[in-house]
Length: 546
Image (cartoon, rainbow, N blue to C red; front, side):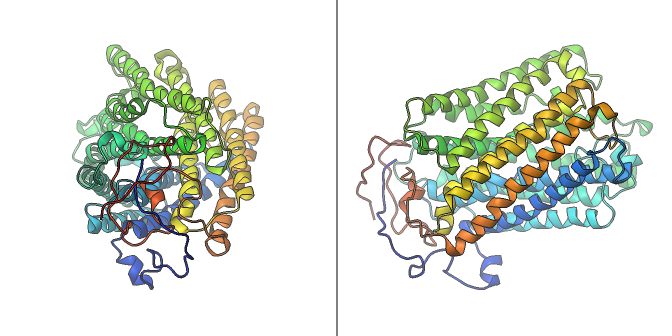
């Protein structure tokens, strides 16, 4: 992609940019600058990630010994429920789109801001309000239903804080809807001159597809949560079979949103991968159109496969067969992406810098998670491993491994753009290696545990499972160190890191054609795009229209 604004190196202390344009807490809490809102999200989700991680530590400590002697079964139920709620709704879903997407999409399309800046700020406030309700449920006793809120337990039998936790998720869901709506309108209406749909960076394509799911799928979750509230508060018989309701209806509604939600999480990370692999192999993305359309195909197929979560719920064999076939089909566009990324690497000038290490980590973890997903799409195998640790390992490889590798890879790639500073490369490479090793040591033993029959959500287990559980807990300790390292050296780099300049990785894309950190309105002049994305064959700049 050609363009645009040639910016001479200049000290970030002397230059006016979005970070020093205004000072004081009010300038941040009332900002409508998409870049500052992205940083508000960055700090917020880091807090919720740390909280979810703390619950994960308690889970792994409990499972170190077979007897379950650290906490009671009731407390354990609350701990793994809050771990799931914090991680899924307050970290994994918003992580890449709300932070990197918010920061980058306007710059990637040559716009000054998102289409609705005030709505963007309102989205962050809704996200925080949802988080406050979730935290309220924690400090007032917790919730023990699991993050899936299965009925009739959540509506009738649980005596924990179901309503405030559900209300928090409902409010955070509206934040997600508004963010998706903002992205869709922005991409349609605010692209720079010359930036056609097939010149868009694949990160924008991926977030556009994820936004479609946010806007179309999240309202179903909102309706489901409202029904749970009505059932629990007024006993009106929607899901409770004693009152004439149907608990399977809840599963249909919940998974109609929650399976596509997996793609809200993973699609933006896939977009990050396209940017990283192209930039650090110095090549165009092989089969650009196929990768772009595969994002949309994943979004469409994602709405058709919810029933594979219900193979053992008593649904008809014919329905199960249809959902099984559809679940296999959704693997095709995912495989297209992996094959095209691999083809992009082939004969590329690959640079093994930190973001690229995370990209390799993503390829490994996502491939393992995707292949084991095929096991779960098979009716017979799924019946054997349903509700075992095999499922836990599978969705952690996809939802956690894939998303975090994309998130950390993207955060390192664009960190010089966000802050204007470089991080220490040696520490960053060490962190990427520790995260990859720790993640595999944590979750790969869980595939074996699940295959051998250890059920999930149990706080005690037979002694023959202890060795694998100890391995998993040891891996979690290593993984925790890997997560903490970036927190320290990225904060250090904000003050002591060397200045980065506008394009330290010699990457393509409009965001690299403006200063680091960017000025408040992103570009001093409106850029004109005259080339396709990832034009590594022609690095020279072209004139810019005023």
